[in-house]
Image 1 (cartoon, rainbow, N blue to C red):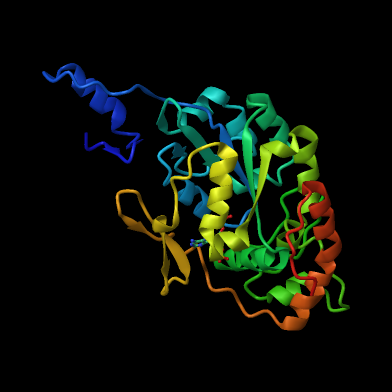
Image 2 (image 1 turned 120 degrees about the vertical axis):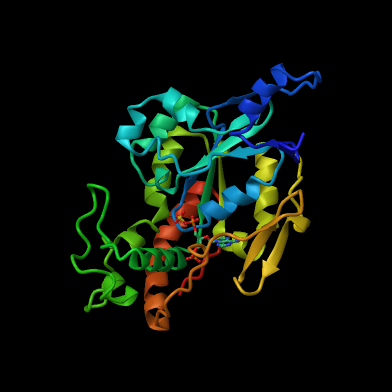
Length: 307
Ligand SMILES: Nc1ncnc2c1ncn2[C@@H]1O[C@H](COP(=O)(O)OS(=O)(=O)O)[C@@H](OP(=O)(O)O)[C@H]1O
């Protein structure tokens, strides 16, 4: 019975355990588990708290998370392996449990929405967004820490800069010397949410997509987790007791149903570089029009600052 903790199975042990039970003198009955295709996906946006959201939701006894980012729908080499390959990447789950996978690049990769529909047209989608300039700075911070050049992945975007973000500040990469915005700089381009949202809404109904506020997920996680529990039609089992604020980390950490404590790793919640206020203000003004288009598409006003 130790393999079951708050109704969760430890996926790798469960089948082996069941096999052992065949030879057991005790006729303990274990419910059947299987690997199922996800009924819910966290599609992005990158750097908006997708890992935090998945870990938080995984506290719920009715949720099973896929361990890593599977990148099934956005990488052709994976997609070509077929749905059986994808299913086998999923955790074991009991009947009635919901399997969730997250790959943040799903949101911005053109082919993904159609591919997801081909798998399950009634799937539930979670879209996390954050104030666009903060998201872009977070993205810059990650790219810089990977010492990666911020090249653009999609064919509609040109090369932003051939110099390493190591040597240039966020301000230099985002705003040209003449004051215009470098919209081809990937961290900025990915914050223009309406461009990508449109495609998802052409393929899925609005009611299938829950837009989650990533800034509130940081400051008041339960407010967003409650919205997700309601959206998924599951009991509100995750509550305030599952969170405690860790002053050293500066973020909420998790307390499982069994009482174990867990913070996200140090790559989540990095210190951002100081970006000068004038640049932030210029960028926020630039995003006003784009944010409005996003609000219009989703039918919600997220109240992001206009300067
Ligand atoms: N509870 C908690 N603990 C730690 N971090 C938290 C938490 N909630 C949200 N976040 C924010 O998650 C940001 C990383 O987002 P993602 O997980 O989507 O990043 S990634 O795209 O998968 O790389 C990460 O961004 P940075 O602050 O820039 O590191 C965090 O701000």
